[in-house]
Every structure is written in C-alpha cells, then in structure tokens.
Length: 320
Image (tube, rainbow, N blue to C red; front, side):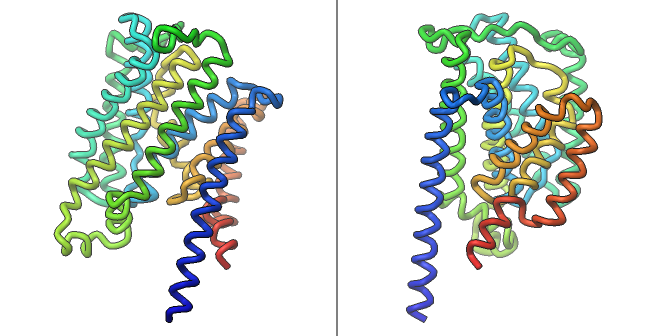
C-alpha cells in the first residue's frame, strides 16, 4: 500500500513538473512568435479565443455546467469596451476592465437565475437569457445595431505605450492572456477549485458536507463571465470593432466546440481547441460557407476518435 501511494505521489509530481514545463515553453514561444515568421494579428486572435475557451472550461470542465450563453458576456464586454474607449476616451486597459466588470455583473444576474436548475434546463436558461442580451444589443443605441461599433481606437496603454504599433499590441495581448490563464489555473488548483471539482463529481455529497453549493456555482459563473469579458474586450481593441457576431448564439456554440475538441477539464485543452478552430477559420476562409460544414465534420471525427478531447486523450494514453 505504501509503495502504491508513493507511486501515485511520484506520478502526480511528475505530471505537475511536465505541466509547468509546458507552460514555460508556451510562454517562450509566445514571446518569440513575431520573430519566427508568425503573423502577430493571427496569434492575437487565437489568444483572445483561447482565453474565452479557458474561462468557459472553468464552468463546463470543473463545475460540470454546460452554458450556451457565454457569447452574452463576450459580446457585451466588447461593446462596453469599444464604447468606453471610442466615446468616453478611456485608455484601453480601463476599457477592458469596464467590459469585464459589466460581464461579471451580467454573469451574476444570469448565474443566479440559471443555477436554480441543472442539466439541460440550466443550458436552456443560459441560452434564453443570452438571446435576450442579443436582442438588447440590436436595439440599444450605443451598440449601433447591425452596424456595430467600428473604428475603435487602440489608444495608449497607461497613457504611454502606443498600441497602434502591432508589436506593442501583440505583447499587450500576450500579457492579458497570460494573466487570465494563470489566474484561472490558480483558481482550479486552489481549495475553491477542489470544491468545484467535488461538485462536478458528486453534488449531493458536497451538500452533505455543509458547503453552500449554489454560492460556489454562482462564484464560478461570475469568474468565468469576467474573464470571458476580458477576452471580448481585448478582441474589440485588437480588431477595432464590436459587432453582433460577438454576441450571437453561434459564438456560444464555437466556444463549446473549442473546449470539447481540445479536452474538457484539462488545462491546455481549451487553448489547443481554440487554436485548431481559429486555424481552420483562417485557412479555410476561401471556401466560404463550407467552412462550417468542414468544421462540423472535424468535430464529429474528434468526438468519435478522441472522446476526452485531443489533450485529454493524450494525457490518458501517457498515464497508461
């Protein structure tokens, strides 16, 4: 028994070291990407969606709640960031924070209502409330309806660094992504995160231990919504636009796809899934609407061949 326990402990320590080494390697690649021929704007788009997927994975992978309404937080944060920077003249970092705060408040409202139910009912409530946000975005004056908010200035970071320079903008986005990723990573591996995992595995057992499960679910929902807002606000600054596409239900479907393909409940899975989907959208753009069909076929293949997702399947085989 002692040998088994020791073996498990060694395996856990080894996996932790590998995880940290992969994070360090990823950071190094991000820092060097512009100098090794990788298009910075492409990487910035990938990082925005990767952060979006990581935030969504906090709910699906670690609490076990499938939300079909995360586009509401992504899109509304993009609108708030774009409006505050373009009309109010706020600096980009303050605009992104404003968008994240609005997304967090919206997450508190939607989470408080949706967590009253479980399973498919939870998913349908989030979808219905997100559609209400979508129709609000069509009618609200500050969103400019179908035209969206165009020509959002990138401005100056802290009033000093000119983000109109692509390289400056790139490293700003890298910094935002790493901050969000590491906070989510720390949340998952904290005592709070352990309770979330326990809720996913056996909610009734957690209730019997005296934890207020609903409070934990709402807290996780708000954290997820806030970082989804950071991703949406950052995307609005990068592409200098916020449109109805950001708040449409299809965006919610895309983040579900990213997470499932990459690996639900894994640290790197959402990043890999987001990267795969963004690559497909960019390199298959020439085929027009067929890109949706091709993406769907790839999704079906991944689900059948990699039931745990790409990263989840690789991790499982390494354990064996």
